[in-house]
Image (tube, rainbow, N blue to C red; front, side, top):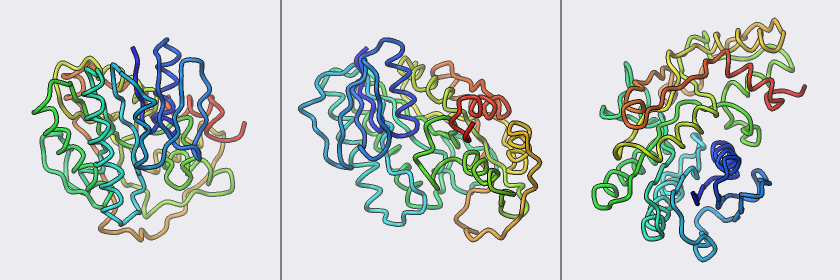
Length: 300
């Protein structure tokens, strides 16, 4: 398989590109020079700006894995995010269709659901709380229009709080598991009062597996990619204490993002199993332990 992976120097993209390359596939990796370096004999890296796509160096492909995006939830410039996350998607989708691709798998996000109550379902309402979430809603709408008009199979994956190795370059945008682990190296972690916000997390290895399975999806569609049930931030600190051999106690602070903060993320994950046989397998305890063992979570 010859695959084009966008966002390949980022968190999900780098893990996906390297796994595909390890499996013997020919990978064209499009990314940004300021993120990570990918060194693998089956990976050819092409560096680009946000909207500067070197089409003449890519060639024909079998699959597009579109992971590239601006994922900063604190950016309020909606037009910037629409350009980067939607207009660029359109260009890559069109390129894939005209250059041999039979499947397109792209990264969506559970940010589209915002603060909706209950369990999130793909065919239910969306209510994004920020411009990033709005851009992902627009991307999903474009994807639906695209697959309705074309024969290329398209699958969108709505990730929920991905964590694991190769995210440390993201800084403040890294998952809270990573951020709390860093805080706990210096002292007690700080949580918004009272640390009982519920979120679902998913380990990067499960996300990579979901992408690969989605290539052979039974149909077009959008699927939540998450590990159930949701866990509190207090739970995360408890697991980190166990894995890191610490006894840190959370310090609770006021939440400055009231009205713009997802406090409850819980997903119906049956669609992913129905479409391409995916069920997340790595629990929070197993995932954090694996993350620590990799040497990427904290200095060993």
